[in-house]
Length: 445
Image (tube, rainbow, N blue to C red):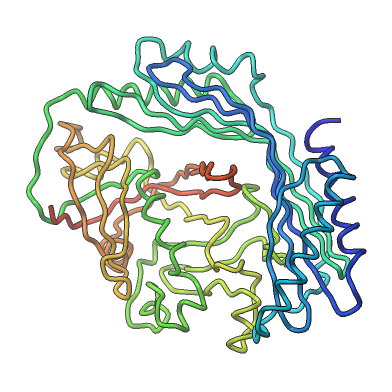
C-alpha cells in the first residue's frame, strides 16, 4: 500500500471516529493536508542536502453553543494511535469552546456534497534525480531545490460531506550563477520530460551569457517595458493581498476599490479569473464548499466579482461564491492575448526586458500603487536587440496605469507559475500567466 492509499484509509477511519464521537449539540469539520516529499538541494551543481519528508496534519473546527474552536494536530497513519490523538484534541477543542465568546458570523456546517480525485504523475525515481539534473548542467554553478511526491488534501464534516484530492507533482526551482550574477528559472509539472528540462536549462544558460556583458545604468524614469511571465506572476501576487477580497472591499482596504466603484479602469486587454480546470489545486475550499470551476473576476478591464466567503456573505448579506476564508485567488489565470513570442523584442523596440521582479509591496494601496525591484535576467533592448543587462532598478507603479491605458499587448502564450512554498509543508496551487508589453513603466531609483 503506497502513501496515498494508506493516508486515505487512515483519514477516513480517524475522521469518521472523531465525527462519530460528537455530542448532539456539536458539529465539526475535519481537514487533512498530507505529503510524501523528496527534497534534494543543490549548490555548485552538487547535492548538498537529500531529505525525505512524510507528514499528515488534521485541522479540526468544532462548533458548539454558537462558538467556534479551531485546532490542528498531526497524525501518523497508524489508525489506532491516531484515534487516540483525535479523542484528546476533540476534548481540547471542547474546553476551548467553553472559554470563547459566541461567534456572531459563524457559518453553519452543512453538507456541500462529495468529490474524489486522485491524479498520478510520472516522476523521476529517487535514484535518477541527481543525474537528470546535474548531467546537463555540467560546467555551471547550479543552485536550487528539487521537490517531488504526492500532496493530499481532504475534508469531512458531521453533515456527511466528504472531499478527497491527491496529486503527484514536482518542481525544480533553480538559479545559475556567474560570480555575483544569476538567472533564475523553474521547471515543474506532473510528468518529468528530460528534453523539456534540458531546453529550460539551455534558455537559462543563454540568459546567463547575456548577463556577462557590462551592465547598463539607467536613470529613473518611465520606460517601455516587457514583463515576462515570471515578472507578471510576481506582479499578480498583489491580487492575493486583499485586492479581490469582498471583506477587504467592505472595510475600505481593497486595492481594487476604485475599480469596483467605477472611478478607475483597467485595459480591455486584461482578463483575470479563477480556473480550477487547470488542475493545480482542488475546487473545494476549507469548508468543503465547491467553488465554480471558472469564475471571471476581471473581464475586459472591468470588475466582475470579488471573492466572497460564506462568512462575509453572512456578515454583509450577500451571496457567497465559495471564496476561501482569506478571499484570495487559489487558481488564478490571466488570459492570453495576441503578441507572439518571436515578435516580443521587435514590438518592444527600445526599452526594458524584465524576466523577474521581487520585494513587491503596496506603496499606496487605495490607488493600487506597487513598489518593487528588478531581479535576475533584466536587459536593456535597443531596436529589437538585447544590448546589455541593467543595474537593479526600483519601480513604483499603479496597476491602474500598467494594466490600464499603458497595457499595449499580452502574449498569446502562458506559463505555469507553480506554488513552490515549502514552509511547514508543500503547498498546492499556482497560476497561469502570460507576458505583457507596457508603455511607460515607472522607475524611481
